[in-house]
Length: 80
Image (cartoon, rainbow, N blue to C red; front, side, top):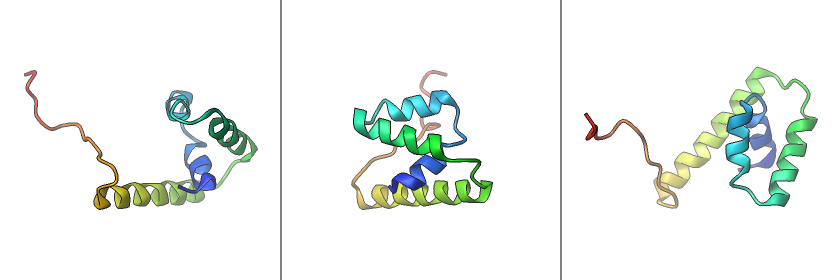
């Protein structure tokens, strides 16, 4: 995923979401991404949505190719 798209997509996210995402990056990648997000100045909502859509498309392509597996909630409700 392009770093510019990632920073744009995370710009409006809650700090908890950003922290969760950043905790899965190397120190250097985390610093670079945080810096890119910091330098964004009120990006247009359409630009944010477009970046988010490109990321979702990349994730779906990886899933379809078998490179990653996405576990979705709402499957079996064994606890009920």
